[in-house]
Image (cartoon, rainbow, N blue to C red; front, side, top):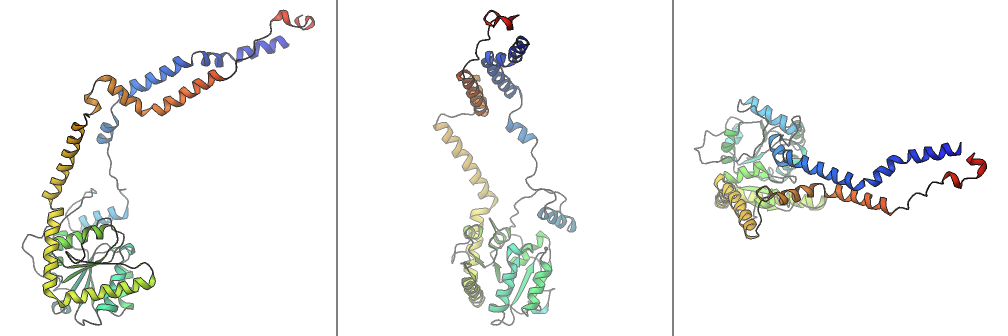
Length: 357
C-alpha cells in the first residue's frame, strides 16, 4: 500500500519535473513565437492607421448637436469634427441684428456666442450686463447667439434680472452668417473659464471684434494679450473677488463703448494677430517646421526608423515590446532552479522487511 502511494507521488511529479527540466527551451520557444508573430503580423502603427475610429463618441451631446446643426442648415451630414476658423475677408452681408428688434438699431451691441451650457458661464454674462452695463447705457443690448440645454435657464436669468427686453436669443445660425454677427457687434464678451481653446473667441478676434473676457489661465490667456488685442480680466477666486471682477468686467465694456478709437485699435490688432497665428498658411508652416526640425534632429543624432535598419535592429525593437514578459518568465525560471531538489525516493531494499513484503 505504501509502495503504491510512493509510485503515485513519483508519477504525479512527472509534469513538474519535465517543466523544470525543459524550462529554458520552453522559454526560448515562447520568445521565438512572440518574435515571429510580431515580425509576420502587421505593425501596430499600420493596424491603428487602417482601423482608426473617431475619438468622439457618436452619441455624445456635442456630436449630436453638431449633426443637428448640419441637418437644419443642410450643410453637412458627417460626424467628423474639425476646427473651423471663419475668415472675415469676404464682403459683409446685411445687418443680422436689424430684424431682431428696433432697439438693436439705435444702441450699442454686445455679443456672446456659444453653446448654451452652464460651464460656458453665459448666465454670468447676463448678470454682468444687467447689473453693471444696462443701468449706465440705456440703449445697450446683449445678443446671446446659440442654443443648448440651458437656453431656457438663461432666458429665466434675463427675466429675473429685469433685462429680458434687452437680451436677445436668436438661436442657432449658419456658420456663413457668423462673420456678420461678429462684424456688426460693438464688443464681444466671453466669461467661460473652461476653454482649452475657445472657437468663438478665435472667430471674434479673427473678425476684428473688440473683446472683453476673463483670463482663465488656459485658452483665453493664450489667445488674448490684455491691452494689445483685447481685454483680459481676472475672474476672481472667491465670491467677494468674483463680484469685484464682475464690476471690473462691466467697467471695461463701458469704457470700450465710449471710446471708438480704442475699439478700432484693439480690433485691428486682434485681426492681425489672429491671422499671424491661426491662418491656414501659418498653421501649415508651423507643422512643416516641426516635422522638418524633428527630421534634422534625428539625422544629426544618427537616428533612423527601425524599419529601415538591419534585421537585428528590427528584432531588438520587437523585443522591447515584450521585454517585461521575458524578464518575468526568466525570473520564474531562475527561481525554479534555486529551490531545493526533491528528496530521493527510498529504494525497496531500504524499506522495513515487513513493509517490503
